[in-house]
Length: 163
Image (cartoon, rainbow, N blue to C red; front, side, top):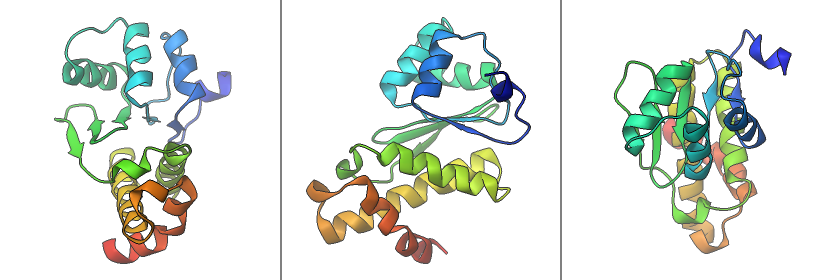
């Protein structure tokens, strides 16, 4: 845990890391961190930080307080950053609400961060690529048959469409 607070490079925090942070709100989060909670995980984080109010005001307050990039996963996705209005990211489809899809998203964002992309840009591009790959997979397999590995399989096609 001491290593996390002193990490000099950007890091993506999801799942159990978010649970830990909700239980230890005074734990120092790296400033370049990207947090990727779904709405239930966000609720726990907000309670731990004793932030109350509307969804937008509390999520924005959390991003400001922790100086992190906060991607709230869902339909649509919402991105909160310091000193900016929230981004609404309406990419993806209902078939992507499947086990492991968030892990794929975290991996895409982490890979972009590792390539020296800034946290906000990596999260925006990663979220869009994730959603586009999911949409391409849903076109070919239907949203009902979509699994997380399909998103990975269709990433090359998403990259080709985007770039």
